[in-house]
Length: 345
Image (cartoon, rainbow, N blue to C red):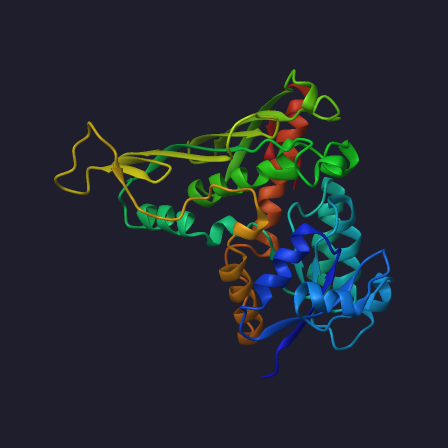
């Protein structure tokens, strides 16, 4: 079977990371890019080392019969309509997080994707990281027993020094602290504890620093989740911190606990409860997209398409459940009340 051809819409920082990743993917290659600004194909070849067809009109790109996959790397508010149009054109999709910045848009995307029967990979790539694989293995092998509490927190100061700051600070672009970045942490909590969320309560606040004053939404949120089976969890999303990037994970179960890359488990004989035992792995410790585990995720997506199978771990339906929780959390913070997940069917 010939290589699947990928067309990327939106040519910024994230798109560059996607292009570099696809150079190491078997069975697919990037062949086209679409941007509102006119692109020079010779300059692109110098930059990316690839011969790329260029488009300034997205619809023209969708009409190209050679393109099999549309990879959406545009700012957040453009994702929904671009994904819907691509689905209607019969293109499989890679969508950078978040899916969109409103629940009605998520519903419209779900309808279009289901009707078109296209396959989707959503960039919750942390699920393919070595760190998450290790934690999942600990859970699946019973080292933590029955987990009853978990917290996954995202600390990443997105200030003037960061590329996306200028548009990220706007409510109609960034959306919320969770939508713009913290959704990775909420998605991680659901990966470890399950999707059966019953109720969410969330609170928001902002830094007093002048560096984050331009933000049009609360840049720090704390979200409490109650699961149908009795579990509880917490997600902090802090994009106004002045500190190194930190992705915090703490899971507590009937047989032990895990803290980032450290563990205590009664299932492992000889461990002392007075000290954590370190599990050596590559931590999620950077917000730089060049460090994100796109390679295993994209390879999994291409393999799924080639084999006629559904994308594991980060298909649209799984990502949709995470976004339901995000939208419920944002509504809770806005209206200062607990929100039932059934308010977002």
